[in-house]
Image (spheres, helix red, strand yellow):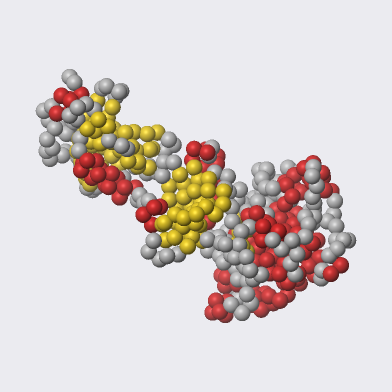
Length: 426
């Protein structure tokens, strides 16, 4: 039988379906075509019930021959195909996890649109471009671009991280999903806000607040790394409150560095916001990890020594960043990576050069405390936030001592001592 005869043969008109599935209602049913190969076509009867597609040999069959779950599925429109001089096929593609594809063909465009719209509704499909106008490129990431965008209804300016799955390994995709889950958890003034997520067969789109100050390293570079101690303290405190928040949920960042801290703008009062949670990990109170991670100049000694570590690795990174903010250089640095590792493991941080003579003893003690080689001597972030260098935030510190754990947690997440939110909490 020719393909055209097959498609126009007896049995094409639709009749009442036999599709049933207990309490679930059939959303869509009808005949669709699959290609067995380039020349052979097969018709089947399909029923969309809940989040599953049931396949029958024909519309009269009571027992289905297969079922496909639509959980985690992506749908993609496909261009029409001319089968012969008189017959056009209208296909769409479903991409099933991990990466299996099925193409379905309809004989008219209206039926194709009905199936596409029905499946989109079931899988919660949404299109980035329906909600945002994409604009200029803001930067380039490991797997794609960061684009400026504007929300069509509100006019709010955002940043969209566009990642090509083709450039990502399975492990890369898993790390990205981990980052998304952590960002969903975070609601803190010094952690980047996740606003939206979109995903299709080819790309992952992460919509975040648009921060115009660039990363902290670039922010410092524009100032030739010269900022006041007061400003260094503000940034260090903002980072520390954000990390307290993360550690309270059991999350260790594990790659805290200036490049992973964005500034809200380029002013001298810009706020710091932590980003990039791709290497983050949930570590329980008594749990330790041995996974290698991080960036050499900011990584703690115990990681380089391949010893079990906990969330104290983030305290070391805060110490390195604070040292950089105060002195304009890294505490452990060299052109040779092996020498950086050796310094990190063996050498104490140097506080004998300019401008350390102008830095307060509290600031120096703060850095020394966090740059302890023994992780147990660094304390925890509650001790960090109560350090004398942060004494100007004493109103918050006093409030922490007087309130219960729930309000105490809220107090720790704030930076400014005169915050109305803090006053309401206590």
